[in-house]
Amino acid sequence: SWFAADGDMFRFRGGAAVARLFPNTSDIEPSLSRYVNTGLRSDIDFVVNVLMSYFDGASATSSICKDIVAALPVDDELLHEVSIVIEQSGVVTGEFGGVGEKQSKRDYMRTWLTDSREKVRHFAEVQIRDLERAMAADQRRSMEQLQLRKRKWGAA
Image (cartoon, rainbow, N blue to C red; front, side):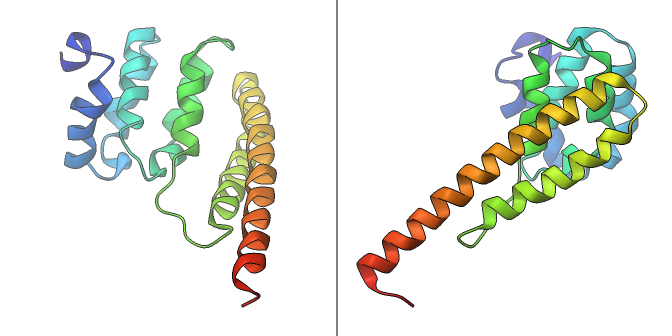
């Protein structure tokens, strides 16, 4: 009912409450799967909003994300939000921490390439390409920042 009343803010209110009550998505995965299995877009939207409330990226490893991708049309805008769920991560450290996190996500997405569902494989291919582009950009930016610090403060 919270989602129906204010879907735009649900992930920050109702979804956040769910994430606090159930910090591990595996505890609520069966319940969320039932919503995805209805095939109703509004139910799938609800589940995506709940998953977006988990900011550590752990919800991405749930099989629910694959089921959502398989249930939606290839051009559905909710797939972008599933990408966000997958790309979320906890705190990263070090100059190249973001690159390492993206490499882990890319390696995880490669496991999706063996799924029997065409939509899931296609989504994984697109996601892997996006992650590789983001990794290259993060790598370049980190190298530039490192070189600038060395020039300004000297080599460490």
